[in-house]
Amino acid sequence: MFHFFSTPEFWVAVSFFGFLALLVYFKAPGLIASALDKRADGIRVELEEAQKLREEAQAMLADYQRKQRDAEQEADAIISQAKDEAERLAVETREKLAESIERRTKIAEDKIAQAEAQALKDVRAAATDLAVSAAENLIVSELKKADASKLIDTNIKELKKRLN
Figure (cartoon, rainbow, N blue to C red):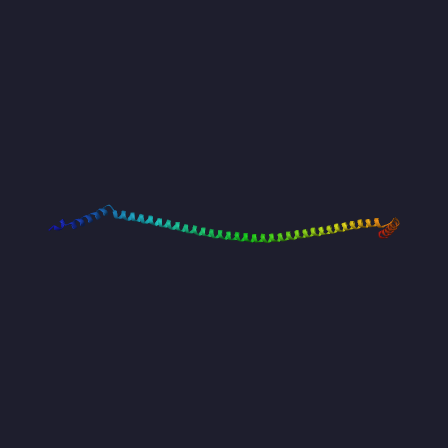
């Protein structure tokens, strides 16, 4: 009659129900539920914190990307300004070089013209000296005293006419 008391299934069922009774007696379902609730609250807090960190990270990323764009634009502006400045300086340098070359060419031409004029004066002076010397030699060798006095008197009269 009590044959089912000796079966292992009976004792497993009794132990299971006894275990459940002990859990209820010591309020284990409430402890387990509160532990699970605590754990869920902890996970929720961690998720909220992770969400806040994610939003902060996205805000920082957006800020850094904006700063990078601004820096790139500023660098482009600086490069553009430097190119413009270099072109302006190149044009200015070319103009100054052309002016300098033109000025030096004019100075050289003036010096050449002065040298030509001086050379022409020197040649004329040498020719005059040579002509005077030749005339003197010719006059001394060909001219007699009477002719010389007559020539001097004629030249003095002619000189007086020219000076008046």
